[in-house]
Length: 261
Length: 124
Image 1 (tube, rainbow over the protein chains, first blue to last red):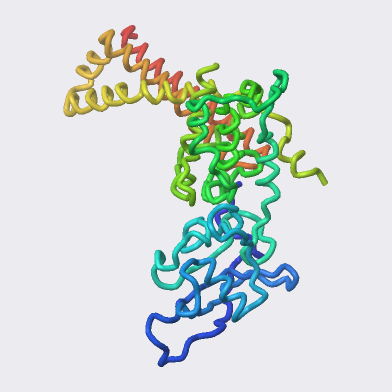
Image 2: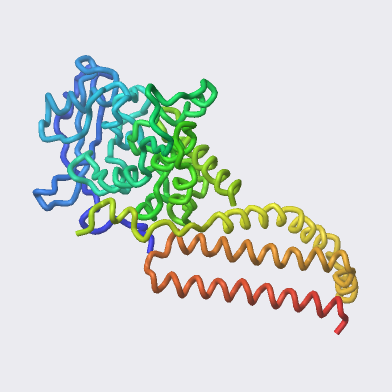
């Protein structure tokens, strides 16, 4: 059955307060962050620790604050990050109740204390680092590369401007998993439902005028769980930090299924 | 110790679901006017006698629309219930029992409702 409560060893406890600012501290200078902490080596339940970030010494983004905390307060804080400009998708996490990229979210856009958790409903490796193994395997399963049978041309596979434009809104996906982990269907059935990010990627190759395996790709998706667990909840589209529309990509897949039925 | 890819591929795609998806949409569209018709029928007969309601339902057009509503909503209900079970019930045993039970329930509601309309129309 679906789980409405966390397993015993996942229940979040109250953590410690690391560096509360002095009572006479300059107003507005210190910003409160509440971070999910989990260390598998201790065997303890996860906890939420509180940190205060000196905004006069820290960049404006949430990721800047995390790096500031790691550098100045607690070097054990663990999170993924790389490009710090919304291209790599590494720093996806749940910030202030919404899945987003820490590097492209302004701390000013959140009110009060900023709560940061790992992406929802994913196994946690440590602190803010979720285990993405299943997610990446699902991506691999839709074979996200060009598949052709025609002889490979001497130069490039040609594509008209119109056909190239069909990939707009699809190719920009950075696989951060913000959409999939915001989807209740993916929470309950993530073992069989491919989820919005992977379905958007599947549609990207189905839409590609150069790909010659459209029918096979649709065959592999035509399944009550792989595709049809999507109930058009639209959390995916709301969550996407790149402004993409995975729900539209899934609708496009369903349209193609009906078209060929 | 299956690899992640092996787990994801599982037993492969069922190559099904599109017909169910389409049928659910078609019955949903059909249900809009049919349910409006049902509501209007009920509202128009508030305070009416048993004989008056029976006579109304015995009219061919009314009976046809009511039968259409029964069939369409029973199919829609069966699909919807199965979707909910697929979403939330993960134990295979419970799942099969629940799906069979909802199929019987939807079938029983449809048969009983159809028989009721037919009895009124045929006057027996």
